Image (cartoon, rainbow, N blue to C red; front, side, top):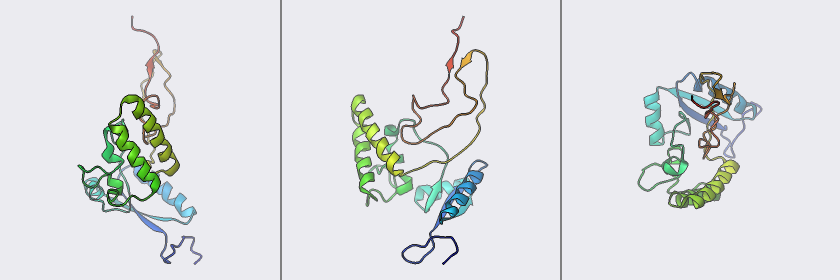
Length: 191
């Protein structure tokens, strides 16, 4: 109708309510994402609230789209309930707690199978399955983290490879070596 917001086949506006808790990091980042999404006709409505209430709603599945802090095990196979439905963890994963009833795509179903198999596999097989799962995640993006922040580092002439700036990725497998930009080595041996 000319207002710049896309319409769904039902005629409704393409509007998504985005829940997040009030935070100095997430507020400016989310406002940037909202303005970028609006440029392509998606109206994101920010619903900021106190952290405890936000977390309760998130784990109960009361959201359309949600942002939380960077958290999780650094080895995705050690905390499967963050990624796939687990019978012993009700409402997992929290970002798609209906996944155990209805997978939303064949790609996600394949991803789930790979993750389940990888959790009980020997190391070599786990690496192979993790690479396949990574590829599916990269091509389909079931879950995404967006964030920016500063982290202080102490510089000395004995610490090597310390970057002035760095990126930090917390997607599937992104926090384990060799992908951790925050790991440094000591330049000279101790005397």
